[in-house]
Length: 218
Image 1 (tube, rainbow, N blue to C red):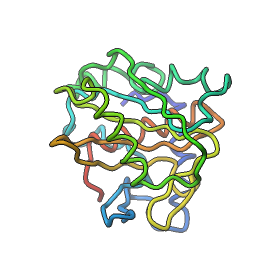
Image 2 (image 1 turned 180 degrees about the horizontal axis):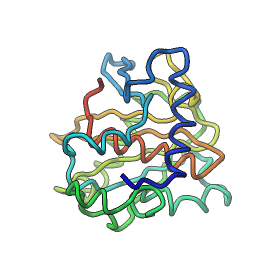
Image 3 (image 1 turned 120 degrees about the horizontal axis):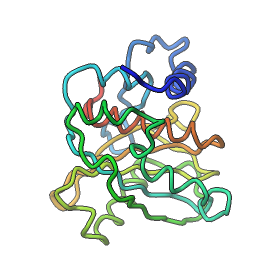
């Protein structure tokens, strides 16, 4: 598989700190119980290995990005939104030929994203994120179309994710989950803020690949 070297390096860096001393090096995801006793999935391994196995559960993923927090209003953070809004659109992230062979469509579809500016209440629980996401989707009928949406939620600077008792981006740079609303199942990925835009992009791509190929933690 001709995956760009830079992505492999970044994924190794992102996953090594999680795997060291935890016995999780061979795992790709790890289940964590959140506040409502539901199960979210931390990324602890290299989701790129999933590209060599089986088939995608979501065959035509379409990304909708939600930029969460007042930190996204600054000039510095505004500049990176366009790239983060389409993790499939840059061939340097993942070879588009690989995705096409797997039957993935809409790789270069239109970018869709929204901001949800809010006072910084750190950390942000998974239930809070679910509440915000369902509210955004209910207010925009386009986001419940037949397309296989993957909702990528980017936390702004100053915000940390919380899954049950686990807090902080150093524990899990990205995780994913799903929530049901009005008969629709919303699959979403939560990505912690990183000063390095490429690292943040890589973490987002890892979460999207994992949720598409392995929606249930293992």
